[in-house]
Image 1 (cartoon, rainbow, N blue to C red):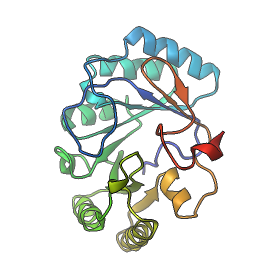
Image 2: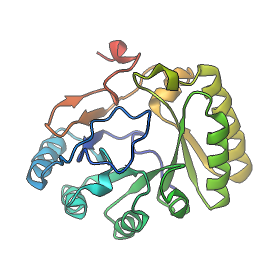
Image 3: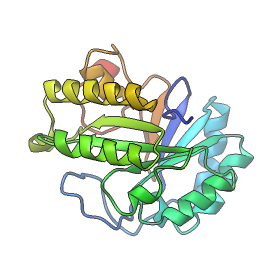
Image 4: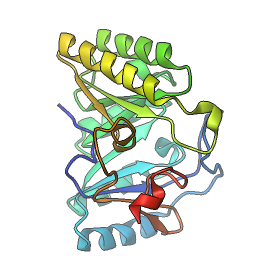
Length: 235
């Protein structure tokens, strides 16, 4: 059963493209036609492997819009790195075929987007449940539907960003995580939460251990998002 790839691994999140087919109102990611070149990606992985990184998570943008995604994953395999990505389910057949070919260790699929229900039953799928302000009913509906369709692993994420109107309360996060945990026990489905959410809930004192985020220009950050209330405590 897949686990979120930041658990007990040295993980690098890499922005491989700024292309995206959606306009989610809460998203603050830069959108353009830019993508990381294959040569730049290869050079970056050379550096990461010498630093002891064990796994990479490809992001963006929407990573399936990168023009050479299979080539990037082949390079990751050549470097001996576990690879994953998170998708808005615009191209489920592509992601499933790359996973079945052994190029993806796991993939996150965003609930409620694209053809997400076509992907959740795969044994390497992690269903991402994003909680926004007043979004408890949506998350629980997605969770039930995912489990009914054969999902094995659900990951709760609390919105983090500059748009305060989308930030869920800590009590809402706690209530949803509790309900998901009960649902997971009843259905034998793995329930997890990202480091940020665990820290907000008091289940962890730190976050981002062994983590680095890389933008297309090669710059790095130890936080998963540019703005976060815990940033000051990270450095």
